[in-house]
Image 1 (cartoon, one colour):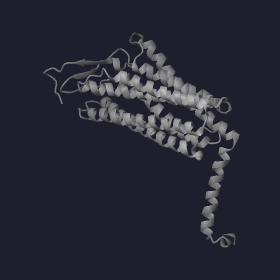
Image 2 (cartoon, helix red, strand yellow; image 1 turned 180 degrees about the vertical axis):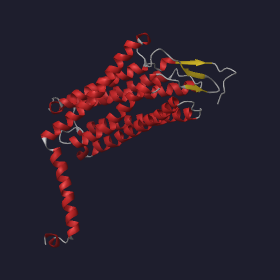
Image 3 (cartoon, rainbow, N blue to C red; image 1 turned 45 degrees about the horizontal axis):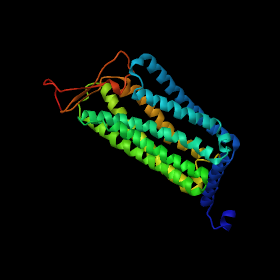
Image 4 (cartoon, one colour; image 1 turned 180 degrees about the horizontal axis):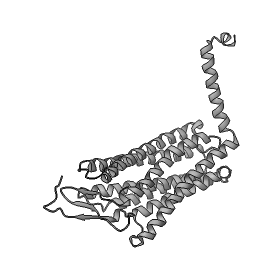
Length: 323
């Protein structure tokens, strides 16, 4: 009878009732202080686990091969420990962080780990770019200065935005800051697509002589795809965050959205990166990349925890079959 009064069939009324129930469920969870705390504490636990794993890996590698100093792998694990450790602390005290004054403190604590996250995975792109260009007999002298310059520019621009927000906290500056994060996320995703894709295609050209090499080739493909997708989705979600109040990630009453964002845009990427540097090229193995110009061979050490410093560039010999 009620359905007839509103011009709806019984089936349409049933669907509308379920849609309303689903909407109510979303709103109930979002506005429940207990559910907010639970979701942010789950995120804190997940990021805390990764931070501990990264720290253990860093200490383990340092104890086994202290003579190599601060290699790419060690820096990567150290940055992952910092990023995930800070995220863990922020999520544990998320309710207190939201109440901090002045407002700029709140923004810095939420944004700074994202900047460090960008630096961490830009380092992984740098690692792949060095392997790729060495294999093609191209000088890599300009890669690290470019890495430092790009990161310096990114941090400088963000500091300017923070100062502007501190001086005059207007919504336009907040939007600019979020669009800036969307831009650097897009930049990172293209970096993974460019150098991860190039490295994968280059390694695919060489005969796979063992299951270990086949596994490493697959790992490069998996990490490239996952990191590209994570940073691209991160870019898209930051664009929605900037212009749609319903998609604001800086609010306590959007815990479900925060859980989805941090789980699939940050956490998935972090886990893949840590596991790859644990088991991939950086962990040792029998990877050999040969080209007509040079031969890059992964030297074997007494420990599996070797990094980019273990690559040796040698001249091709007559006995090698070059591609």
